[in-house]
Image 1 (spheres, rainbow, N blue to C red):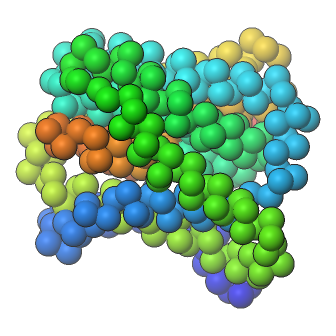
Image 2 (image 1 turned 90 degrees about the vertical axis):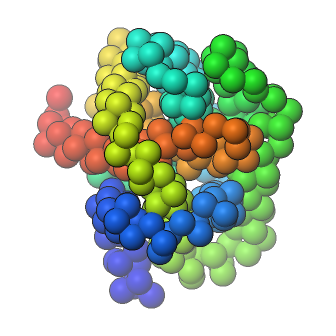
Length: 311
């Protein structure tokens, strides 16, 4: 199990590399991964269930021990990223599908990869976990409302349908994982090294599937989407960092807030696009590309912060 744990840690820390590798294969040999899009919601639910299994009730203590920082991170998560998404979609004059996709990414909660990146960057990992938990639990209500408010100018948005999707693929799997951890914690701890592997595999398959079915469309508009995604991610990390510094948070907390704000649960945006916006097939593309880019940018940011941890 120790060997499995080392392999799991390696794969988790280098998830961006594997996402890129599988995406390249999916782009040139789409037949290998096109089937994955039929199971996008299942893959995400599995990833969120794996996240829930790693959460114990004591982890919620972070919310009470760091209330200011957790609230700050979640407020930034649900203001900076949605507003930046809308501004970028408007400034770049994206068509309805791509604008919707960018806004979906911006309105999602923080991604679990942020916790790993915070660890690499020598940030405050418990704070990162706390922010991810709270933003995830708020997602069934906040995400649909924000998408309705910001994307309504481009497409028709059903708040209720989106709430149902978020509950099904995020809230229920996470809650189930937490419950199992509470009642069978000893068993979970024995298999815990394997859990990140499950989440990594699920996210990689989601992205590979989206790339496979959109390979021709990526050629047509991939550069534009990549520019939008890079700007979006930079706004999140940059403004998260600046606001955390304004609130005079220490190095570790500032680092975790910046990473949390800039890294989204892009898998959820893909699931929402697939389940609720079938008439807008390109809406899945920004989420897929964001999944690749935010891990790359997050790793670069983490390396820079880790080298300057005394500042």
